[in-house]
Image (cartoon, rainbow, N blue to C red; front, side):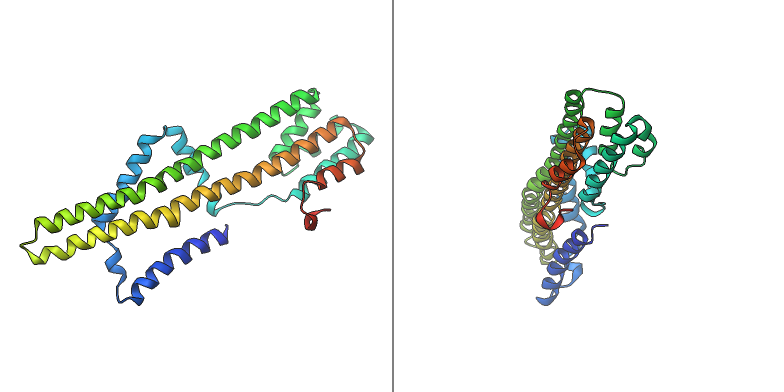
Length: 251
């Protein structure tokens, strides 16, 4: 669980609710079924119309990266790569296949399996880099879904506000219905702007941030795999992989 992301969501929503209460309002003022149906239903419909089902499914799957994310340790990738290299120089890579299968990082494990299979280094690099490209494309499409939804929500919130004002004007002779119409009008705007800027757009940026972290680890793993394949001196491989890290992370 990413507690920082969860805390950010709680702080953002809590600040709005607390500000509303401080101004003398109540939480019931912000709970408007009609406004919610207009804004969230309209935003969902516009987003579904904009993207194919595969992108929508990818976006929903990527949502777990926002709140549930297990951060991989780049130092562990370096240690695994160097340890495999040291042992491979002693007893050969084929004998290390059972140990390679125990490596935690899936991408590094896949790359080392290609080395054990005897693929040439250029083909190994091409396969791994293509997987990185495909992963980046999927994550960017997922982030684009949330970005687009974040663009639609405020506009549909304004549409809800206009509908609420129409309701007010059509019942101007009945004062008992004016209050509910105005309430829907303003709450719809809050739902649209709030959902876009507190949830949808931050989710898109969080997914891109996670993507960049993962691509960094994948690039590190590629260099580790190629170092193992070439049989380079373990000291040189460690130095090369350490160059990827910040000074306070170096081994």
